[in-house]
Amino acid sequence: MRTLRHLPTGLALVLALAACAQSEDSGSSPLPEPQGSWAVESLTTGGRTLHAPAVARVELGPDKATGNYGCNGFTAKAVFEGTSAVTVTPGASTTMACENQEFEIAFAKLFKGRLTIDRGPDRLTLKSPDGGTIALTAQPAAPDAPLATTEWSVDSLVDGTTVSSVPAEAAGKARFTLAPDGAASGSLGCNRFSAKAAVDGSSVTFGPLTATRMACEGPAGEVERTLTALFGSGPLTWKIQGQNLTLTAPDGKGLTAKGATAAE
Figure (cartoon, rainbow, N blue to C red):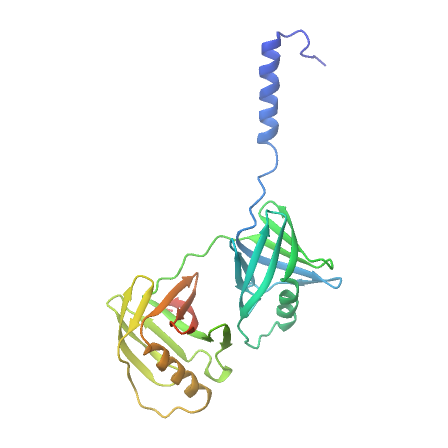
């Protein structure tokens, strides 16, 4: 094998630097930052592996986390120690009865307290002190749905820090759409309604509601009365993340809704 010992010093140095550059180019991809959008792949707990529903996800921000346990949405406080660990303090979550309850309970139990972070190309593993893990894979951030032209289906009602899912008997019945010209219409859970809505930056104000006059009892009636009061309470702050809308009144009352295009 030929060596470089008889080459001029300058040429040997150039070749050596070129070899180093090739080595770096062929090296592993840079490790991802923990903050971002992640799909949940699986959990390990108690010696078992639980595979995640398709909608289970985590959005890790500078000081908070939001996401979906697989059915119910959640918020949490997140304090990072560089890229090596994060301490999670659970906040609010919805309380819908869900098919994959075992996964939801296990995810909520694991995703709290101090979690160490292992990073790999396009993936993270969060590890709890007792050896449980949450495997996350990178997912592109979903584009935010537009406030107008999207049909919003109310899935939970908010009162301060309390988030309650819409009762099963009323689920899917409260829906509304804002048209580009400011016309709002939909169902309050029982009666159909229409109104004018004015959007100003991050606030939306509904004018007087015109509604049909069916007598509405039970859970659907309760949801309807709550939404009627909310829409009539003055300017509401709106925020959209992906397909999720939050409307919040100054007193902390509000709603969350999931979106689909009005054509669907």
